[in-house]
Image (cartoon, rainbow, N blue to C red; front, side):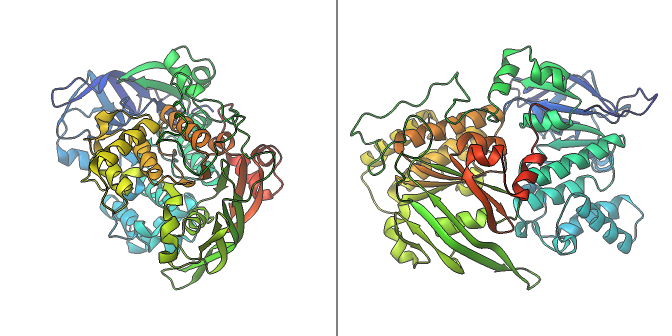
Length: 565
């Protein structure tokens, strides 16, 4: 896609020359970055976690932090230097001159205020709109980002919205004042493919109208779909830059080639995405690490044995409804059925609000169905009093999108894993210590992470700790709810390879929820598609993705960005 810079206008919206950012006297985390962004142009910054992308973007907003030392030959916004600006000047720039969309909408939105009031505040502070005009503009913004029932959502707080709805509210807030520069830091990470396509269309419309967009994304297909140019960052430096098609189709640098190789879309089931890293070795037969109850998955990676086994986890005609804040009853899951066998991965896809997470919570026994049943190993699982599930609770584990939110921030990695191993009961310290070492080895982590708290780990390390914690009770089923959506492409590849290694070694069954059809196509043996609470299509992954029968599945596939353009 090509940018639409204003004819005859040569002044860049953003010009950065030799930018360096360091913290506390340490080596720079941004080291000599130079870039320029014209009106109506989208420049994408890509690279691994810790490469300096977000620090570069936050520095443009004066949000590098109090401990940051920022130097540059130039850091100009529409010809005005941003170096050494006082806080009062920054308050006039943020929102009006530069809009910011962050990945973590839950942390970015005020949990105490309705999202409509938060969006309206920017209009109240920076425009002459009256209350009615502000209200109308808020609803228009929410509609433009594809927010369903905007009148209701405007009255809700961020904690009452799904991740996808929160992200849409955050985007509406960022574009409320039509800033000339929009910084989008992983703006579509939490969104399903159809909503993602709508947001990318919206960003494309803003770009066509002259808005300059600095896009940070680990999703190279998204980058290919909207960016004009791409800059690849590694260790604080830009190592390759150029037109997006040239860089992604014919990368010159090995680092860029490795990023492209890590994309799961089009990769066969079982094909390693991070071939430079060895697979975790198989445990010795009879060792403490070997799984006690489940046969290893066949090396072919096809998912199920030749003779179909009985389902390990099965949902039958599940229905669950909730009462909303407006008093109306809304059905989240309706008459949904699924089966999952040992050593198999069932992918679950659908739009935000389609019922995927509710179905996962029903499978975990964290919610009771209004109708229908769940069976675990052919025995009743739900509905059932928790006291009757307790002895089998360890057989089903979960890995979530945001491990940091599920950890006690006061505990070290060692304490988190010791707690998971003890399961609330006293065990001998030596046995717990041995179990911790085994868990770390099983997820490819070094013992050096044990004294560290989750906040001080990388995203990939945190997710590995989350997987280790889930493995501690030696489950037979793992419910994986968007386990890699927040990770950059290379770390995502390592975690997906890890999950495949663990499945082959331990015979685990995965219910794998993801909005990324490339990930689903790579990891799943079968796929189930959800729409408005119902499973509308299910079957072998290759069949469903190659020849979808249901119109909704076809719409999902049509909306998904591809690295091929």
